[in-house]
Amino acid sequence: AFDFGADWGVDSAWIEGSKGGLEVWGHYLGKLRLGFISEPVSLERQTSGYNTSFLERSLPVQTFSPGSNIGAMVHDSGRRGWFTWAVGLFSVGKSTDQNASTSQLSLTGRVTWRPVYRDEGRTLFHVGLSASSRSPTGGNIQYRSRPEARYVGHLVDTGQISAGRVRLLGAELAAVKGPLWATAEHILTDVSAEGAGDPLFHGSYIQVGWFLTGESRPYRANSGTFDRVRPLTKYANGSPFRRRHSGAWEVAGRISRVDLDDGLIEGGELRDLGIALNWYVNATARIGLNYIHAQPEDRGSANIVVLRLQYNPW
View 1 (cartoon, rainbow, N blue to C red):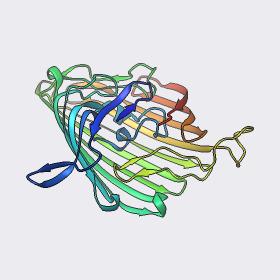
View 2 (view 1 turned 90 degrees about the vertical axis):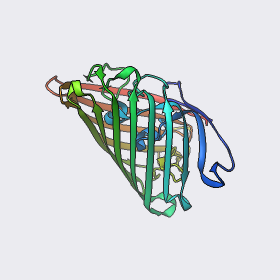
View 3 (view 1 turned 45 degrees about the vertical axis):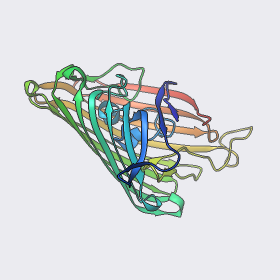
View 4 (view 1 turned 60 degrees about the horizontal axis):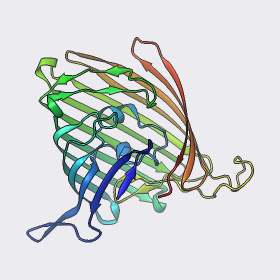
């Protein structure tokens, strides 16, 4: 299987058996996935970039959460998808803004629980936890963040930190009630770096959205992530603002924050306020408009507008 990122790069490429799974001494452990895999951390990171309501992932996720690396992962879901779990061993993959935590070797895992699920997912509540223990490539780690717009420079940056190990912890919540939805996450990154005062960095976000045309944000029970939006009606010719045959319209708001100041490190603190307007023409194409107000601590502010047409036929 292949998953392509929003910038047309290959986000992941892996193989997995269609039947059975990994067995040890006759005991079934779970499904085995091998290849260039997204490490199981964060609801927003695990949700495909085509299925997120904002055009860029939030500050803490883009800053701390690892992206895709080479590895092996065992995963599965419980009966009727009430819970999911995934754990894997990973090594060096790609070093980009989507993968700040590139590691020589990492052990990463995630569990989710869905205590409420009614009306085929139009009412649900989701809880998740993830953790990762990482050995920085070359003994160095660096965290930095753009203001949720990939064409803007980094506004906070720790610089290179000589570290022996990094431990990452994440907590996530999500809820859907008809056309309304909300998600929130908090991520902690504990860096073992005696020369830098063993800094503890952290970040969080909360975002809410509403489908003006009555759709509900779809949920994938077998992976504990959100799926692609399928409009109740496909856009036909004429005005897209007509209720009938208008496609799907969604508005969303987000507040996010990342703090890279701790120990002897002064990487900075950044807060973002974001507003999104999405028009889903059909199940394969959408036009997204984002406004971001970015405010690095004691360094003024920036106002950014991003417009993007996304097309994903798969």
